[in-house]
Image 1 (cartoon, rainbow, N blue to C red):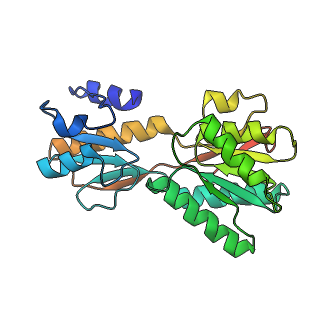
Image 2 (image 1 turned 30 degrees about the horizontal axis):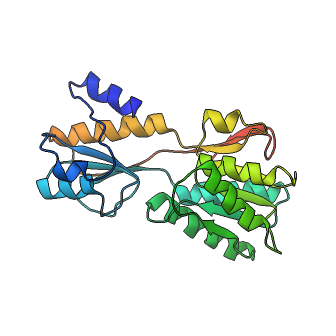
Length: 244
C-alpha cells in the first residue's frame, strides 16, 4: 500500500484506502480507478468499478478480460518450496491454506496436489476458515500433526498461519515450516522461518503504475508477473536462492 501510494502521489493522484464491507457500494466519493487485493467476484469495489466502467487493477487473478492483474507465479513457488523440502528430507509435506476463494490460495492448493501426484505422495491439506491468524494456523497444524500419517513439514500460504504452525510444531522439533510471504515476524521468530519473499513493494508499484496508465488512456488491460524469492532460514536451513 505504501509503495502504491508513493507512485500515485508522484504522478499527481491520491490513493484512498477503502474499508472492507459495503463502503464501496454505498459511497458517493468520486474515483478514477481502483486496485483490489486478493479479489473475489462478489467484492463490492470490483462490482462497482465494473459497473461504472472504471479502470481496475487486481493483485491476484480475477479472470476478467477488462481488468489488469499483478500476480506472482504461485505454481512455480509451490514446486520450488516442495522440492526444497524434499531435498532436505521431507517425504510427507503438508499444506495449510487460506480459503481458496482467493486465486493465490487456489493456485497453491492445485500446485500442491499436482506436485504430490507427481511424487506419489499423499496430500496432507488443511484449508482454514474464519480469521487468518496465528491461532487458526496453530489449530490447522495441530489437526495435521495429529494424523497417523502426520506431515514432516508444513508449507503455509500466509505468514500468520506459518507462525501458528511453528507454535504447534515446536514441541516436535523435526517439523520443517515454510511461509508464503516474508515478514519481520517470520524472520524474527524464535526459530526464524524459511519464507517466500513475494516482493510486495514491487507489486504495489506495478499495480499503481498500471492503473494510472489505464486512467490516462496510455495502456490496455494487461497482466504482470512479479518474481518471488525463497529465503531459507533455520526452520529448514541457512541460505537463500531465487525461485525461477
